[in-house]
Length: 320
Ligand SMILES: *[C@@H]1O[C@H](CO)[C@@H](O)[C@H](O)[C@H]1NC(C)=O
Ligand SMILES: *[C@@H]1O[C@H](CO)[C@@H](O)[C@H](O)[C@H]1NC(C)=O
Ligand SMILES: *[C@@H]1O[C@H](CO)[C@@H](O)[C@H](O)[C@H]1NC(C)=O
Image (cartoon, rainbow, N blue to C red; front, side, top):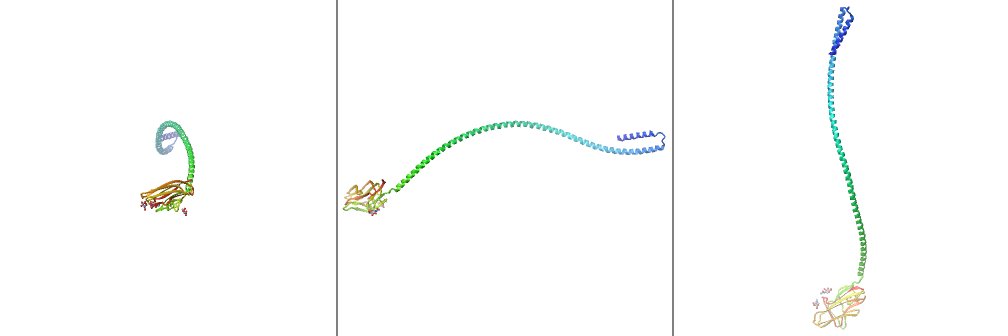
């Protein structure tokens, strides 16, 4: 509005200058023309003013828009400022936090250093302990080795002893085997024989007693047909006999011979008619082929029955 009024004043003043220049001798026609021109001018001016008003309106609108934008900008600025303040606060907080973290970091560093020292100490202690243990283990190992050595020596000694024992055992076994062979090879001689059922009686001549009921005859050295024992090997032999008679008022006589050489003469005079016995025995050294026989003299007798009252026995004690 103010701009429009200023424009109007400016135009009027211009018109005044033109009027002064033309002078006083101008006609009324000229005046009316001029008036007409002025009216036109006013019309134009009005139009201009309208336009100007529109412009002003536009400008006002613009102004409002600008104001709006300004307000928006100010709001933004305020927001930014607030934001800035917030950020500052945040930065402050962060700084504080950072400071706190630094403190914490320092504490952690201290603790780390302490821990490292502790670890170092522990390592040293552990190392010392391990060395001690290692020494102990070495000592034990050495002791064990000594023991093992001792055991080995002992073992060697035992093995030697064992070998000796084995040798002795082998020798003993050989000896036993030899003895067994000897025993197996040695003649086995033993016999017992009974007179048999009934009695024997000599006539005018002496009689070789034949014990014909063989009880035992290992080696067959006793001949139950002839009554002779014949030594199969040189050696020491033992002989024994028991003979019986049961008749009254008779002499019972028995003799032992070796190769017809008399070794023994026993007799018994019976008066009661009951059983009478004669027993004897001798150990004899015989050569191979020597004979032993029992004999009764002439007019003599011996009795036996199923009870084996009269028997003759002998065996080899040992060969020579
Ligand atoms: C016993 O002697 C008899 C007579 O000499 C003889 O025929 C017999 O073969 C002998 N018996 C034994 C087992 O030697
Ligand atoms: C054998 O003889 C004995 C003595 O004379 C006699 O007591 C016994 O009854 C006899 N035995 C037999 C079975 O004859
Ligand atoms: C006498 O000896 C024989 C032979 O060994 C035997 O069978 C018998 O039973 C003996 N007699 C008695 C009464 O023991």
